[in-house]
Length: 474
Image (cartoon, rainbow, N blue to C red; front, top):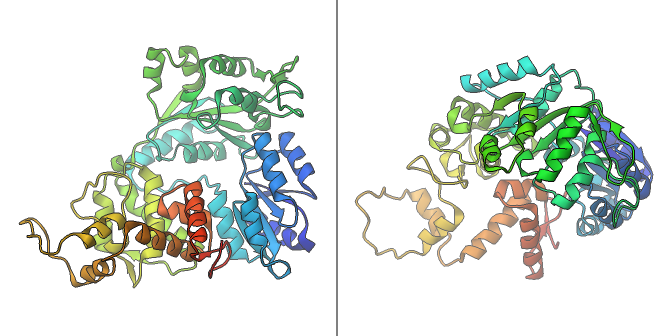
């Protein structure tokens, strides 16, 4: 992970950088917003920015937006000097706020949550072992690799695994989501631009290909790329050189190209949406990642890994899965694959009590259940609570346990909106105000979460602030 630190904060940020370096991060430091943006513009990329909360965070966020530089920003401040620093930092656009002097465990947890950079692949199933055997064989080469599979199967994790096993492992790994950037801007993101090349090009900008020089570039969801750009990408692969937008001299590049897609690219070629010659250039080797339901032995080992990860980051003891909870996980179809499993276990860690993680803590939200027995969602439970109690029971219904009756009874008379509000605020409290953690657990976007919290605050409800376990006004 590449960490950019902006500011000094009387040496406390230096301590934070040392904690990050112990976790393998490469750290660069500058003293202000403008030098920081200039460093990023010049291709010295970062996976995470930590900035002194006393600096103009809003200006940094605006400049990053105008330059289309996507990197999470964490504000850092000395609590005793300004009690409202966290509020101002979040309102200015920072993703999180970290109080200083830094607590090593808190720094480590937030770094992992915001900019996790792991190339390890947790597995047990023979299907995954077979895929990794192929990956190990071709990783040392410079061959282009097309990684395919359903959403959430871990295509970027596989790309990072290939990079870590390659001869380029000490070089940069640069990922670009081709589906997340408008077509008219993607060319500049890939190849860079010269000053004045178009409206808004206030300075020379180094593109992702140059940023990845000597390392690996990942073109995520390459199937979404416009056909015109596909031709320019093909030339970059063939000639090993690129042209900046507005430039008059080609730039030589030395990168390995990895690409991912959750679509059938052969069908896209037949439909005319993807160039056949580019497909063959990218698909020197194809790594097809099986869905989680096709590698069932990975489910429990991955679940245990995520339980350990989120137990540590949330400061709770690690609990084992009960037999009933394990049975639910094993019989579910996992339409969201590993990503859905991770979110499910994060929720389970926070919702469980006792010596084990029981079935009541397993809330499945990704799609239709493969099992007959599963924990209901909050909305479903609330609906049951408001249903008439005099309705005759179906012959196939199972009797409600005393514990379930107490839980349902506590929801009677409450609206779904009220139950949702309490769930969101309680989850945020469990995460000590960490918006990123809470959004992942709840299975909603960070923007949706922030909109909900703004609404609750305006309604007079108390919500936890980042880095604080107590409920305060947002």
